[in-house]
Image (cartoon, rainbow, N blue to C red; front, side, top):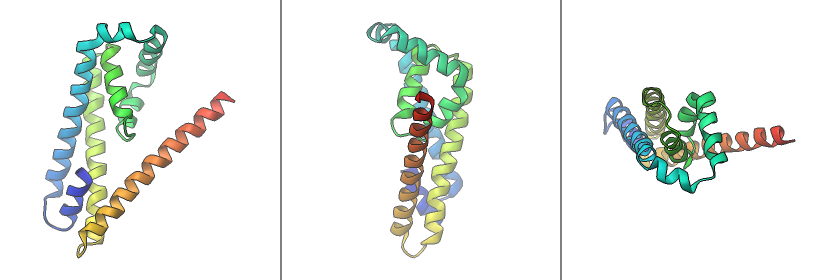
Length: 157
């Protein structure tokens, strides 16, 4: 939706600043809601999870929290697991909120601007800009995931 709105902004139909603000607000609301769900269901959910997995998630969030919170915003499904884990492992609220706000601003700007560029490039046919922008977003997500898997394989070897 944010990319599509960015395309419309590029075609002159919407304000780019408002598109980025709405995408940022939506991302932040979703991330903080998922974190809150993890905090509220923490004890019940933790009993159903292997303790070693929960301990591992807590250590990763403690040592690489910034990277995980911001980076997961760009991985489909990754953000949900990361934000829920942050709540389950009781990541300090202040730290989480700062990182979630940064992630939301970065992602909202990325999505809005990606669509905007597509909309500006194809002003006469905004649907082509949408296809290009969605293709670029998908390509970036695939490249990030492939890079992550390759790095994981190298570490395992």
